[in-house]
Image (tube, rainbow, N blue to C red; front, side):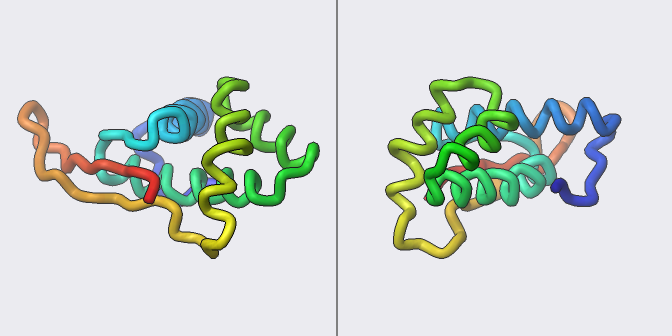
Length: 113
């Protein structure tokens, strides 16, 4: 389900990180993180929105098994997914911001289009 970047974490830590970042992105519409984390979050968010567009009980339960907050899952199915009903992918945008001051990590903003 996830890409090939390990992000310096074990598989369970990486899955928890991605679950939380997907939940935060869907809740707020925008997320500032490192560039490589944003590139890992992007396909997972796209998959969640595609699940939301199908809008069945099975897809709701599948999305809820990954998203950590029930109100965010409701928002996904009731507000976010209907907005992209006529769009065939490309729901997110990653914009580079430059280097972070402390450790020079490349920062980026991932947002819903």
